[in-house]
Length: 108
Image (cartoon, rainbow, N blue to C red):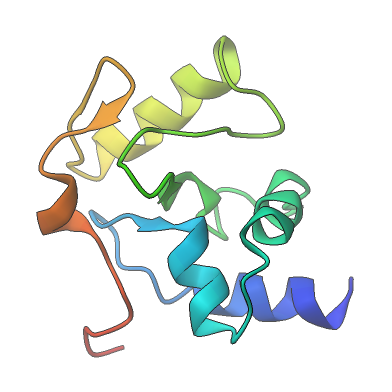
């Protein structure tokens, strides 16, 4: 595992259950604009859902991808994981996205 990947996973572990964050927020917290690189790391997450990559969505609240897929069973799994945490998803969009968005401000 690369140092960058380890840093992404460590940061992702801080996202509370019932919250979501974005590829952009994670990248910025790591001091980079490499949003897509964050997505590539999450695509290869060997410890999902323990390392909760299902909590990462696009900056507009759309689901984005999961396990390297953008539809089908993988996205249904992402939706189910989020719903189990109380996150409502409708038509591929996180409802109340702004209220659920984690930017690292909560206590860890």
